[in-house]
Image (cartoon, rainbow, N blue to C red; front, side):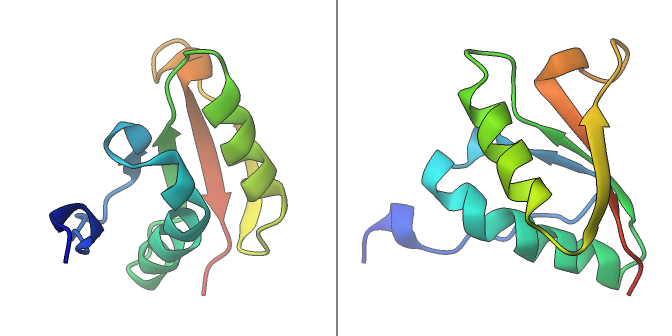
Length: 93
């Protein structure tokens, strides 16, 4: 087994920094992470996707639009990452 394919345990907090993940993993990562957040009562998460070209941000936003557990999302203000991060509001369990 390739070490890159092994699961990595991610601490569940109200901040998810996507810089440490491969873009192709985002589709599975977001719902799994949000499920764990909801299970421990975290209903507002700051997702850090970086500024870059905006491709990852658009990918994240497209995924968020399709997720039933997401009640809303918006770009962060300048104190929380500006357009390099998104606040995500989650439904309680």
